[in-house]
Image 1 (cartoon, rainbow, N blue to C red):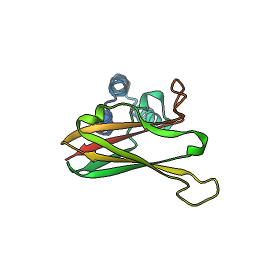
Image 2: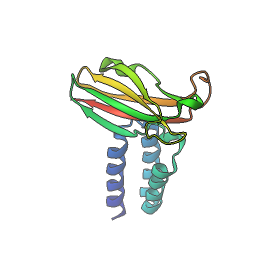
Image 3: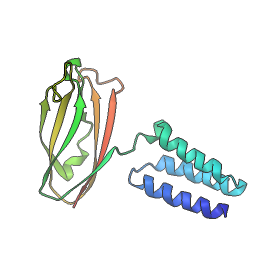
Length: 161
């Protein structure tokens, strides 16, 4: 019975993290899983899995915040909340996405909720060019503070059909 539960946990874990290219987490999981089988501590393994998912360890930075499916040739938007008045804005960290899509423009809706000291909405207008899968990784920071840790990060998996 413990081996069966362990196998099910492995399948769930592999399915959940396979889209995130988190090889380090899978390797750690496999090492812990093997020890769990030898010692029959499947519940400890489950606890470790829950800890990885809910505690936000540094190894989980590859987690995707959202998945977007779009047809090739179509446009789509990614809307991110910020506060431009404090100097913070969102930016894409790399250009790896450019093989499958293009960034058409970035617009800002200031105080989009109409509240006092309200947040701004930064909208990235993208166009899907060719079929494939890629990721968009955004960081929220002050542009002049490039060597500091970002205030916030978001990653989107983009599936172009």
